[in-house]
Length: 73
Image 1 (cartoon, rainbow, N blue to C red):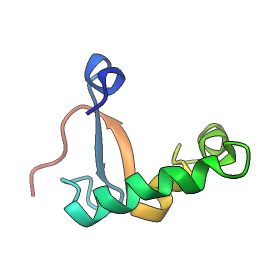
Image 2: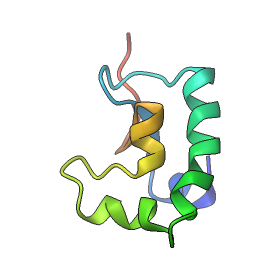
Image 3: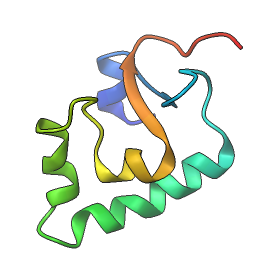
């Protein structure tokens, strides 16, 4: 986790089940960061206008950032 996520106790979880994220989702999310930056960082600005507060990298990976730990599965 990044220092900011640790400081604010934020966790990346699966967008459908709110459980732990798979390795594949982590990989997609990492590379999708680059997609989010290409058109003037619009993928990150999207978070402010999205109902689920997901950036493009989260949408592509099927993840969402929440406060607290993931749900037990």
